[in-house]
Length: 64
Picture 1 (tube, rainbow, N blue to C red):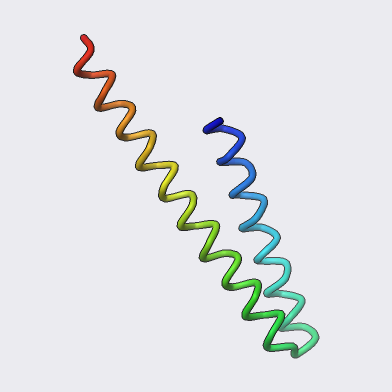
Picture 2: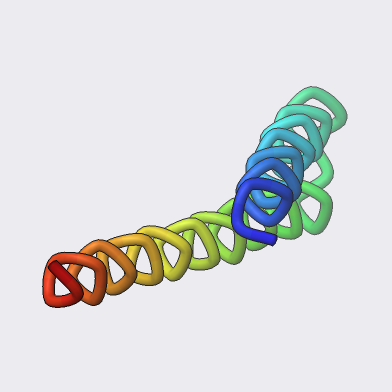
């Protein structure tokens, strides 16, 4: 689950960057803003995945 989520989140971030770039090129502020929002959402999800990974490492260290 974790690796798939990480890939999906990274793809979402890249899609957001593309959308932001398209908005800049076409001078469409709405598209640009949606792209920035998608990137922010993706980065938040990625941070959540990092917290999950860190939590799992801490749990594993107590098992030993």
